[in-house]
Length: 212
Image 1 (tube, rainbow, N blue to C red):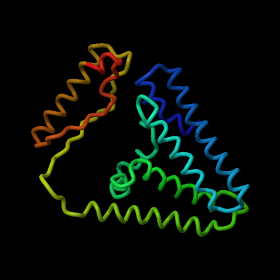
Image 2 (cartoon, rainbow, N blue to C red):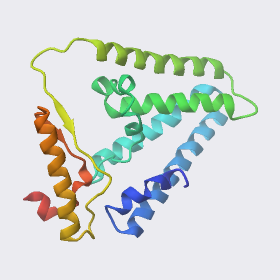
Image 3 (cartoon, one colour):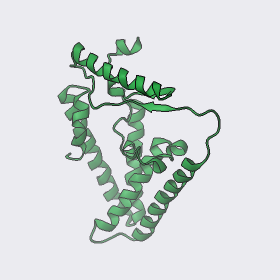
């Protein structure tokens, strides 16, 4: 619950507090459920390979959220790796789910070493495979980043500030934020950026407003 609560300020800027708290609790319960299923699988099958239940269950839940929720899997832990460019390159092949599986599998395998007093059989093999998988993904990403680009180059710009326009934002407050974004966009355009990426928190719109 403490770990998932780090998302509360962000969620609070987008929705009422009770709903934000509900999401925090739901994520904590998902963590508990995933860990419970994994522990039960290890106890039943008595092999470290059962730890694969952890990434499988989590990726399945993440995929369902991406398809079913209005904001998709915006809180996916795969996005925590976006700044690690070589690691993030796997999304070009396997999507967000592929990246999430690799990091969850690696963390679960490491937990087998540092966690239980009595380790299940095949623990070392599972850890080696997990680390090799992570190394392969990072190696592929490093190679992909250094591969010369083909076609016409496109310069992207990213504009993002800490302030968000939530449901309770006044017109004056929202106008101040939009003016900051206007200034950032103008600066990026002056730097020859042809595409500017903006965060979704720039505005919270109703269904009718979004349709317009």
